[in-house]
Image 1 (cartoon, rainbow, N blue to C red):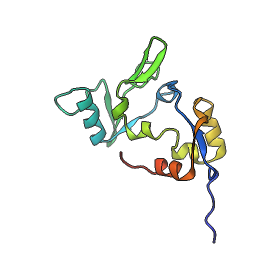
Image 2 (image 1 turned 135 degrees about the horizontal axis):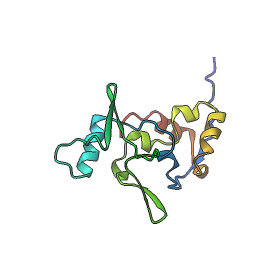
Image 3 (image 1 turned 45 degrees about the vertical axis):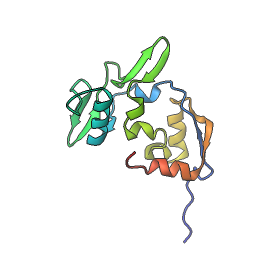
Image 4 (image 1 turned 120 degrees about the horizontal axis):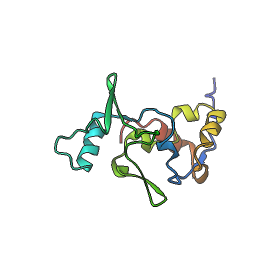
Length: 141
């Protein structure tokens, strides 16, 4: 039996516009592994290789970055009309792999729905199937 081709088999376009939409809005979770937490802590020059409760919360057996009131990620910056990430070089894998998440790639409709809030989706650099699948299935960086 032939393997069913993915709906995005011809690739997708995406270039981040640094709008910050994926880092704000509805409450949610930005999952971080212990290794990622340590890297962020080191980047922030913390002596204990961990993050404070201001930056990190425990959710069951996992950890998630916290949010500011209003839904912005604790590390999202908005200064002088510019949006950025104060931990960009060490941001968690979840952030690194946007928008090539399983939920967004589950169907063309799901991709279209996600693109309504992300001006970089369907625009910019073309990512072929191999690049998308490599990003989608990445488990560490």
